[in-house]
Image (cartoon, rainbow, N blue to C red; front, top):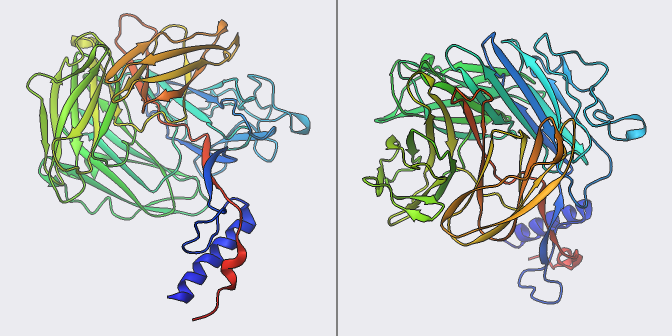
Length: 522
């Protein structure tokens, strides 16, 4: 026992010596060397992964890269986005140590494109991320646009965000498809997928590393697991991407399916592209980790149909209270006061026009004992042949700061929810991709409400801009951004929840105490 304790403390002491951050103290030490509260410092390196945007020849894709200005971040940095075919191929900007930078490590001019790039006509985007505080865009056309893997370092890393937005003019999955490119991880939950007739859903996997990743894909329907051996042990090549049609993983047609992506070795980015013959399509991004209480933020006010999908991965059923946080307070949808979720089975609930013309977010809480659940909603806007659909997964809170790239002077809606306590948030609009100056507004969100706030727009805006949402006080706060298509006759739209942008990391403050290394042996 004593040897184990000494080993643990010796390891911690070594970590402290290397990083300068770890705290080391003897067991039972309550003296003056107690660790100070953790500080939050800017991250120094981050990765993002973007799935292949579309299989349609009519697809037009825009990538927007943005890094907020972060106090305390390094002065110099770089960022690259590389086509994920074989880990090489076209780069969105020049690779190497000075990617995204000018001579002597200085940041590239806003909007400057890498000279070694191309014009995007071959489906490979041209994009050199610019200086923090200014978004930069690149484009790709057609069905050949690849998945992308990206890395940012130094000043470009804290809060780095890449928005991928695709417009498809016609066919299955028409409309506006958007997502925030995601950080690599080892487990993902996607409630809201489908293998029903009329739906064509793909799970996209992107591997950022130089070794193969192995993943298991599990599907759960209304009666439990949908048995299939095809999804077991799927190999994703180094620096590459894979796209799997869900209907090839099972013969069972199900309206509501939960997809579980579990990485055996390596790490991946994962997203589900859900395409519907009648209501267009969008990306279904991973839901927040299973939890007893969940928030699905930013359901559009003009939603004509909302369907809630839930799944509990544990061995116990879950009973949840359903509330809608509206501008005037929390209300209970008529006929849907509670929902029962059977263990290991996907549950779907039609909520109809639940928002009734007002901003709204769903707040799910346990009626009794807390059971971890994942959740998402499918939202439909429009009527008849002009319907379009999008997905909103349950989200983590804004935290210190959340970021949304590619906002437009028209067609941008920012929805902010304070499900419990009143909160104050600061919303900042960046400079535009082609010009404009920053603008900031502060809003108070009453507890139990959702507000569609008046988004600040950069003065003299040219192009698109980024938004950051920062929690000033109170909370927690949840947010989502809705983009609508430029054609006013079509209800095309996409919604992105805004969790914390991972711009900072908590680092404990303490002094190293080497005395624990001199304890006598047992």
